[in-house]
Image (tube, rainbow, N blue to C red; front, side, top):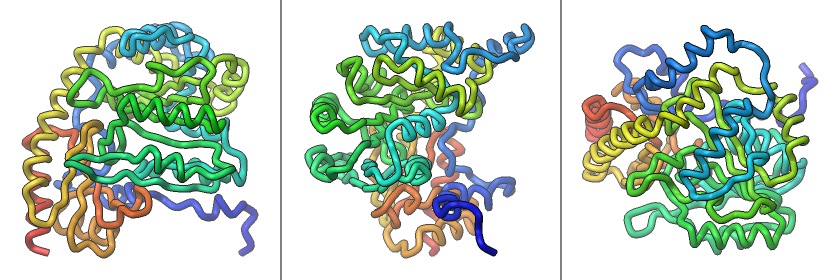
Length: 386
């Protein structure tokens, strides 16, 4: 049958994360390390605020760019965390962080434009860029001195004459790489000179283990710089199912952003936004406790994965994933499927995070240490017996 749909629709394919998870969801006794979320529900103080808002009838439309009180709380939060004075008109809350990525993509990319992704990367980003008609390039991080690193000069050299966007995730899903301030300044200077929009995905900004928050481009960027920062509540406050994020754009685009937020989603649910205000205003203890739990789990992952003969493990500095290279893998998807069926350990195959990652797997370690140890022992036992 002749299709009536365009080629980029026909070419859409579920990521490797989804291909494994769809097989394992509902499986008895499975260790679910595939998704990027913890094993605990959203803390009670946030849930209580949303429930109270529902009981108060907060179920109507609101401003598509986000409730004014939420955007005010986001300004205060960003100002406090980063020591800045963020212009409130730059803050927009369309709904989920993935939606902010989609909006940012369509703000910048037209069919045939070149977009450069720092990889390994979250697969949905590449899907969004393909859907927008981008020509996509990749520039890979590398392991150096026991951690993941990025050659920023090489990244800049990889840009083409028609490069319109660079996408960077720091702290990085899946590697845990964190870009430090000198490299941030160097990269933003380059984007200013070349007129390239830098999309900085900072959704793991509170998931770092040696400081209160990861370095942000917002700490030094000007109001008019070619910078879009996307962020969200999913990771720092354990609010993955709430689907709420925010974005910071250059100043002077309130009208255009109001239109985009309206046509993409008409804003996030009002009661969800009220829960998010509670997270921002009362949730520093939540952030601290979650990060402490993740740090304890990271120690377990480093110990088990870092001491197995078939595992090449580079410890992450941020986020909550291990992204080890497994010696002997030929087909990453087949390996992940076998691991799920035989050991009941669900991981994301590395190929889905960009080229050069076929022999890697991603494991989310954001779970209680005893359960994580069981999962990783099952994983290493599978390696020992296959």
